[in-house]
Image 1: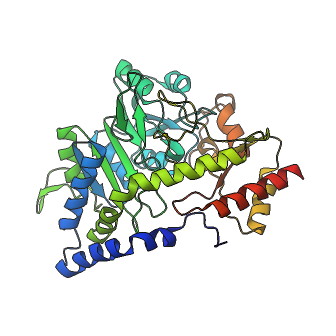
Image 2 (image 1 turned 135 degrees about the horizontal axis):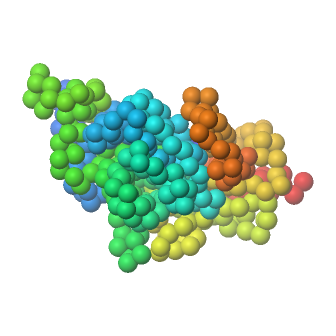
Image 3 (image 1 turned 90 degrees about the vertical axis):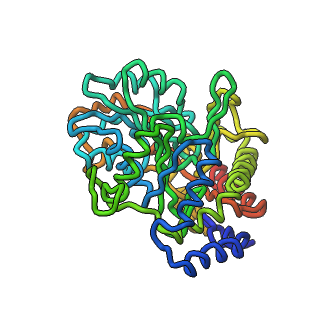
Length: 385
């Protein structure tokens, strides 16, 4: 059995080596390393894939979130609601802009922002909602957009973990994750479903005026060289990273399908084990992981453990050379940087429980049956004693 990786980028590269190398070589030969043809080519191809009018590449996913908020004109003191159970980048950019982060609880079935908690948190200072499509599955965007419309709020989708996932409306219409709100943001960090070989990110929107503003912000506020029309930042996707992404983009659906297939095999192996709760899909089109699943792209495959010493299991897996992850061990409202006396522990029952239960297993495009069998049997043997 080949060595198990949490994310096997080397194995993935082997399958697309010629395409990636050729694409990178084009950039090196034309020496257009910033805003070169490859950036624009990738931008256009991603717009076509997502079915969105505007993709604005940038330097990383954190910048993408920050620039999206800057583009919407949010002001210091404005409140922005987001999920408590997620990576810190989501709340980090809110704080960096002197906005007020408002953290709310999540659902226990899909780990995404809880609609009831969201509505309860809205005040006259609330200006935006940031749903995080955690682990590869969309939040309940239809309900979120209804809440946003009712209260005249912006919606900024954090799509760093769900690129390629579909969201299905109640009427059956399908759209890509990240293209539903006023603006979406994603990361191309190497371990993402669509990852480059360094840092990278992008912003999506169907709003022409917002797209124009954001294009200036990412480039020092310039639309014409040395004419600074808005306050901007330096956040550009370099051409070599765009070359890698453009070589990978045609494979994104097959990559996501491979993750879905691995997820189905994991879940089947754990059937009937009461102490293991496997991931669920919460969608208007299906209620569990199926062969035609398109609503969950499994950036992570995350179990919930009941009556099992999670940390002891993680240690046991590592001892057997099986990598694993705890995403996330501490709620954002308990992080030193974001603690606030406004928060009441009684408002976070699900998040406070999830951080004790969750464990993520290896998940990538190169997982094979032998590896999955070894991982699952090792876990089952540990649980059965």
